Length: 101
Image (cartoon, rainbow, N blue to C red; front, side, top):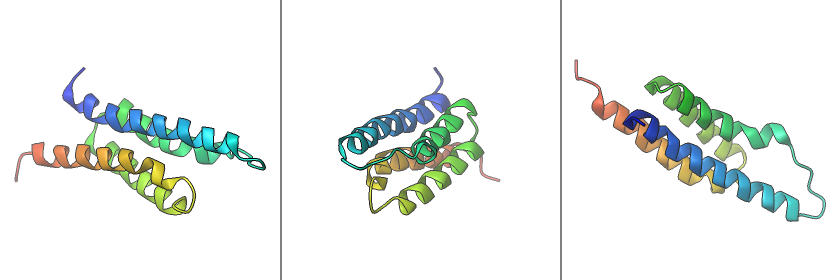
């Protein structure tokens, strides 16, 4: 596995772990109903960055994750902060690798 994909794999793994914790929290709640479209947003964002190994896809995924974390900050958004940080570091590594004009 090359370094570019490895930098995208870490946020995906962290996002998957946060999703499992989120589902466990939802399942333990008495009156919770799973909104699947909310559950899959972080996973789709990070899997897109994994499948399309381009800096633009990681930037877009980072934007989606940040917005998602802000919108869900009062409930489960904090669970995805490690994935946001890992994706930010991947985007920064891409920027540092680019040749300067």
